Length: 338
Image (cartoon, rainbow, N blue to C red):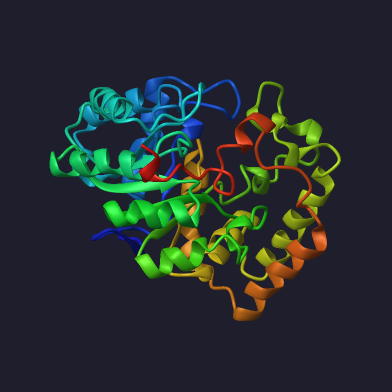
């Protein structure tokens, strides 16, 4: 099946990607056997969804993919992104760590080259020029094809791009999180100017649009979302106002709230590539069917009105200890200091 595409570097990738984190980590405590997870990986390829995103901190995700590549022989059909530098002890952007991380990921994945390699979180103790300088070497060595950043400021993006072209910037972007649209951030403008794809993670609000959460108490114990201030018991009713508004718009298109959200993100700019995650084949199919949803300009504006009226921007989008590594706080020291 051939799906609409957008650009990352010189590659045409599916305009909606797939975040694989939920197959191995954070969302719940049960992730299934390798064989069960192989089924959804197989299904994604059959559906034409071949723009995949993983990381070295997503549990056994890279190991799982390595087994699947060996089992299926379909590595060449996948545009694969992975990440490094999101360590529990803090990001690591040193040359030594970058090289350690790429070798470990390539070994886990059982492959020779990663298509897109992201700096997962910006190391505020290492000038970004140094980190990207090593990534440039990895491109020249054939170990990675494209360089990406995640949760990086405009300044960091521009400094990095001056060393080596940055092909993608991965940021949280959804009706529940519009931080990057703040004119002061300069992120959207910089991405357009530099030709950088804006890869939107958590585009469907970390699963709240599936309809299975009717209150804060519906989030299972042990689920990471329970620790997110934005999803607090106090703010959750406001989150649900957005969900309801999206559902109402969806009824006009025989579409789900998640499909409306993905269609809305695609309508923001041709550089935007959402990467919703799922553990279920039915949601893979639903995400792909988003391409049938055509929102009018009035509906795109209406969704913003729904968001504005809901007042759901109460509470941070990550627990306190993780906020310091996000784009608005995560600049690196000037290169001249070293």
